[in-house]
Length: 542
Image (cartoon, rainbow, N blue to C red; front, top):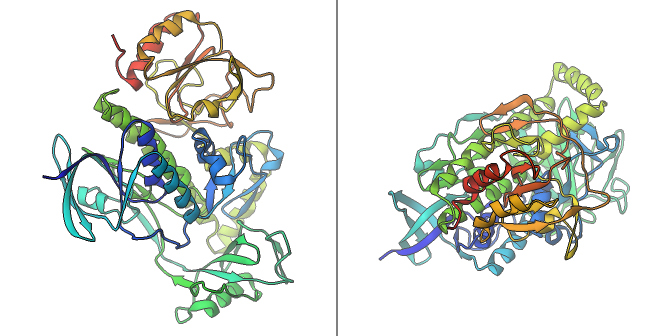
């Protein structure tokens, strides 16, 4: 008889591990199947960019990843298409960054998942599966041979070449750009090119280069990062590379051609020789994120250029969106129809990331027409309103989910700002209220009728009575949503985040987005709140 499980997650990368932890917080014990015997040390993502930092802060994981307490700071500078994004001139914005290699992320997320009771089975790979109305039968390759397990749901978190997606017959339309040769390698760069203690490079004939930024020339693109003093991860994209070159000599020669000057470098002791690739950049999105009892998250659902670092911001928020919903369905707190909102909300966000990474790829491409376009963009990027708009786009802060609420409060569908609060238990902030991954009904005023209306959900929704602190964090009145980028389930806006304004009661979903907000004495408020509670968290207990 096949082993009976609630959820099988195929893939033990950051998205699969985070989803497993979210399910565990929701009262479900998933099993993660990972084909590798040991964690991969292959360089992949080098950090986190965007709203995912605030989302991880909601679970206490930002402190784990960064070693820092408090709110994730905003970055003063970033890039868009290898053009400087000077965020220091913007009063408020949503773009934060954190340098942390993916291998370290996976180590920390694995520890977190195990602490929550998640089972991770290495050297286990999904070979095939079939599903029916009640569940999924999964055939798994293991060191002891193939075996079958039975799960109520199967999650594909197995990357861009996803076996799960392919076995479902889900199309993966898009484009592949293979017009360049790429190089990547771990190297030592010494003084005087390496600037001591800063991670910067002083390149003869060019000047100062900064880590995690791109240098575009008519011949290609150069970028690097430093994770250990003196040791650099160098990336070169060359439009017309020498196919005969290989190893360190090839990387160094390619960097010299792109920059027009030589950078002395040697391979890090114990590291592999630099790699050359012509695999190309894929920009593709699954035609759908769900097939019955099978769902896709992360790269299984979408792949795109890594420029701007949006991959984990997108994929990990897929996991945060899906996790609480699937847990609610599996524990009987909500009906299966709740899962329909996953694709409805996240598919347009994936489209938007593919759009802006394609735009950035175009901006770093060769040719005098692109150079002229870059000159124009540089002028536009000196304007505060443009900088803010681009920062919100790259952070993923410009989305607004459609919560199905007629004439909604401006907060509804948006990320709830991490304002400072005062409660009977002492000072706190929104992120600290979300640690348990449960819905929160935040009462900022005396609202007995609304509190009474929510009593039927007391076992599922945490009631928090609080007042805004004297200096609320990052508040501002939200402008109206714009039509740009709007599509099913998502509306976009300018600005970094909706302020709380005159709102007195806010219903926050476990993923940090506002399901309902309003004033205590507004006509019909109690009934509207009950509808929102039932929509997202199941029918009330009688």
